[in-house]
Image (cartoon, rainbow, N blue to C red):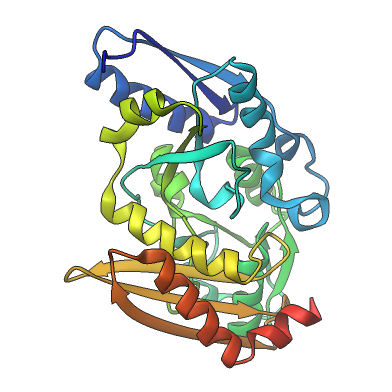
Amino acid sequence: MLPPDRLIIATRESRLALWQAEHVRALLQKLYPHCVVELLGMTTRGDQILDRPLSKVGGKGLFVKELETALQDGAADIAVHSMKDVPMTLEPEFSLIAIGMREVPLDAIVSNQYASLADMPPNAIVGTSSLRRESQIRARYPHLIVEPLRGNLDTRLRKLDEGQYDAIILAAAGLTRLGLANRIRGTIPVTDSLPAPGQGALGIEALSSRPDVAEWLAPLNDPKTAACVAAERALSRALAGSCEVPLGAYAEVREEKLWLRGFVATPNGQRMVSADITGSATDPEALGLALANELRKRGAEEILASL
């Protein structure tokens, strides 16, 4: 197949989304030096609705719908996403054609006063936009107050610096990618804050009807990261994972095996079930389904029914 002569990347216009799109553009220009790679910046509904938690206004799909419309209309060839923002089920006309190598997938505490959640006094205010993070904080630190936090990365940091919060929890990957690692007081181990499915990984989406685009982008796929993300997303999909469900999933490759951990909880953290499983990296989706079944046996069904 001939190399591409022009590719257009649909991207959100937040600073982090643009960094991600520029990163993919640089990789493509290295692969295809004669290809013109352009960015199509877009504002999504998820970027516009900032006064309510995502779980109340439609979930992760709010960050991808406009980008998918650009693919359908032929205005763009690919869309670049943070994998943790991609809905667990895509419409058949869209495909995830490449998953890039993962950045640090952990949650990070950002605070001007405290080095860890354990250091924070009773009634200190922690900001997060995630029910997953909220449930784990409430379970482990019931003396803290968890308040919703929306906006892009710069807006969230500004709200912290203005004193609206004593600490905020953000993905370490986003801070690192934007050169803001100095704001991280510490990363939270997965034992205390299990990441979201796909956290730290970049995904590239295209139309299922564009095998040419899939072939051009194939070199950007990292097989180990792709296997981990596939297992995490299969677990979440099997348990109806969305912004409305406090759920975490994290897989690691260890000696050619996949080790997958997961949990489901109520938002207040008072009920939580967790489990882990190890299996073949060649069928990550089956591993995700198996762990979902194990979580159901341990009580996940009752938790999900109560939400």
